[in-house]
Amino acid sequence: MAQATIKTLADEFYENGVRELMMTQARQKFGEPPVMIEDAVRSIENLATLRRMGIRFLTATSWAELLDTP
Image (cartoon, rainbow, N blue to C red; front, side, top):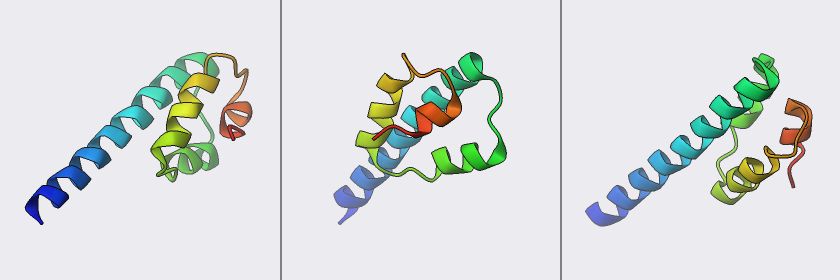
């Protein structure tokens, strides 16, 4: 059980790190997001989605386009 808890915590820290890196880079590219956009990004808990958004960031031209990542 302790190992499962540690893995869960490690996954959560990794997910948060991916999200924070993407948010930092997107702020540099698009400027500060409206609160609604920031809340939407922070609510994404699927690591695969965050990774796709990280790739989409390279070609996106706005926060809205970044959030529209499938």
